[in-house]
Length: 180
Image 1 (tube, rainbow, N blue to C red):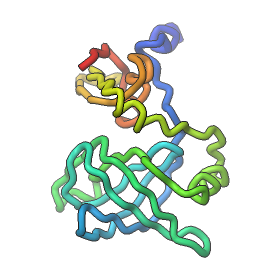
Image 2 (cartoon, rainbow, N blue to C red):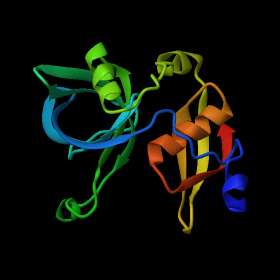
Image 3 (tube, rainbow, N blue to C red):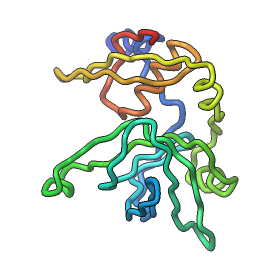
Image 4 (spheres, one colour):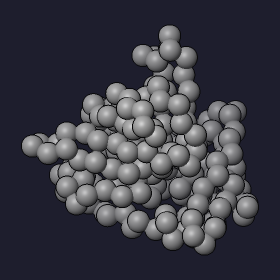
C-alpha cells in the first residue's frame, strides 16, 4: 500500500484524462485519400485505440467513421502513438494506433455517456498546439524493466504526465517530464 501512496504523487500519477471503455467496433479510417478497414478496441472522451494496418505517423490527421444506432459517427483524430506488429502476430498482439480526438459530433459524446463515461474532456489540444507547449515524458513499466519516452502537448508538466499515461495504457509510471 505504501508503494501506491508513493506513486500517487503528482509526478507518478496513473490517472487518465478520460476513462476508457473496451469495445470492438468496426470502422473505416482515411489516411489521406486511402481508406482502410479498422477496428476500434477501446475508446474514451478524448481518444481511441484503433487496430489497423494503415501506415501513419505521429501528428497525422485522420478521418474515422463508424456506425452507431441509425447513424454514422465521423471523427477527426490525430495520431499520438503507433504500435506496429508483424502481420503474422496481429491476432496475438494488438497492433494499431492511439489517436486523440480533434473534433467529434455531439452523438459521439452521447454514445460515450451511454457507456458510463460521464466526465466530458475539454478539447484543449488545439490551444496547446498553438502555444507550442510540448513535453517529453520518461516512463517505466510498473513491475518490469521496460522504459519509454513519449512526446505530448500539454499546458503543464502534470498534464503532460497524465497524457503520456493515457496514451500508453495501464502498467506505466512517470519518471520525469522535460519541456521541449
